[in-house]
Amino acid sequence: MAAEATATAPTAAFDQATSGSESSLCAKDKGWFNWWTGTSFDMLRALEKRILSYLKTPYRGSFVDVGHCVGEADKIWTLSLNTESPNVPLVLVHGLGAGVALWVLNLDALARERPVYAIDVLGFGRSSRPRFSTDPMVVEKQLVKSIEEWRREMNLQEMILLGHSMGGFIAASYALSYPDRLRHLILADPWGMPEKPKEFENNARIRFWLRPIFAVSKMLNPLWPIRFAGPYGPSLVSRFRQDIVMKFSNVITDRMDISNYIHQCNSQNPTTDFAWAKNPMLNRIGEMKRTVPVTVLYGSKSWLLHTSPPDTIKQLGENSFVNVRIIEGSGHHIYADDADTFNRMVNEACQAAARVQPDDGTAK
Figure 1 (spheres, helix red, strand yellow):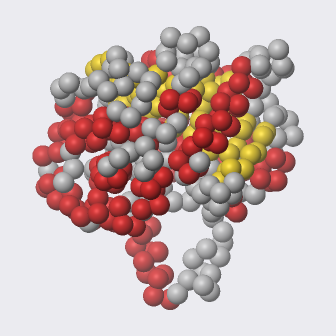
Figure 2 (figure 1 turned 180 degrees about the horizontal axis):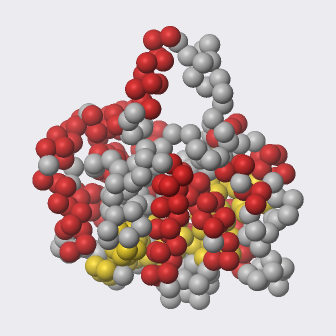
């Protein structure tokens, strides 16, 4: 573990100065690209600190050195809360284009009875941004390896792993590779479950003039509009993703903090590209070791609910415990749409995991 600093109170700074770990990451700030987008790791750190100042629970931020997963010396930015608790820790993996600060509505409630760790996935947030393979299958293995190396460095014997959206796909893939390290798997509106519909781009509802745009978008990271907008990126986020910004309005007094944070997370030099899953999880999740209970949470208004019908997922749990729950009125960002219900359901899943023996899956 490298470049670790501690916050003894929620409002205390966990980065009083740029650490050696982040200095190497900040080297990219000198390029014209970062000048145009108005981004820097210093700004990202400051915005994260402002958002997390609303937490009531003390936390620690640290760079965890996971070695050669993709680059030569990859580092994963990690938030740690309530690490003195003896209960099985909960590890949070964010979705595409997000970062640890967007768990601000959840961390206090989830860390009340157990250790909680939130990580920035490699290529996102404040973690290293190495150049990934162009092969989606290789990228998946690289990300899974990075989480396993992170677990080893953190010396966690077992954990409850929660992934949202793209993070759910990564978490499920990790569970297939390292089932003995998981007490429970929680998939929050997971991406990458179904196959890409054959008629997706040939559907008659897609206008002829839109098809070239789909073709071009294949060659670009899906978050390219934020980078292309340069200094207007925060306004772009605020205007077109006001739905996300408003989710935090009851806690974050300055709405632009969320817009600016999302902009900073996504306007750095891109290192990954995600579209439809190359190897959909629905084709593999049935191979999950039966000792890994799975809880799947969907928002009733989420588009993913229609691509991965709950009944289909339940059928995959014939040899293991699979519990599918719906949060009414929530969309894809269920952790923020109805944070209280989301936190309650996650805590219930964690409590259920505490009643299960990790060796044979039987109740205590």
